[in-house]
Image (cartoon, rainbow, N blue to C red; front, side, top):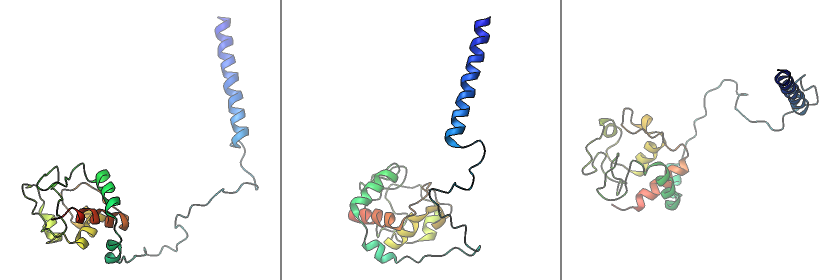
Amino acid sequence: MTKVVGGVCGSLLVFLLGKWVAETLYHTGGGHGDHAQAAYVIDTGGDDAGGEEEVVEIDVAAVLAAGDAASGAKLFKKKCASCHKVDDGANGTGPYLYGVVGRPVGSAEGFGNYSGALSEAADVWSPEHLFGFLENPKKYAPNNGMAFKGFPKPEDRADVISYLNSLGG
């Protein structure tokens, strides 16, 4: 019995000693005093006077012209390939995207699971319509069946559109 009590007391002593060492190392015990300062400051935009959000106009034509098909292929494989196929006529969960640039909305042969929301947003998948759609599909065409959240970076959207345009059609 004395060995058990001694073991418990010894364990408590080790934990208390560990707590004291940690407080000494990390100064969590009694405040930091005047000598402490932030190593770096993260700008959160909290200094604004509660103003409106700044709307940035994007020159879509210039961004699309700078699109990189190779980078778009990587993005497509990472974000889109689980639902969309790029082979002509090979539908997946979503419609095939071979020749989608310039194709009428909702016209992928053999894919019948289109929502009416897409045809309300655009008639043809022009690069400009794709650019808007790929930013946030739910916002561009509310109630569409696509669960993808979108590409927030304009450069990423331009790269994916450049890749899709390179597929032909």
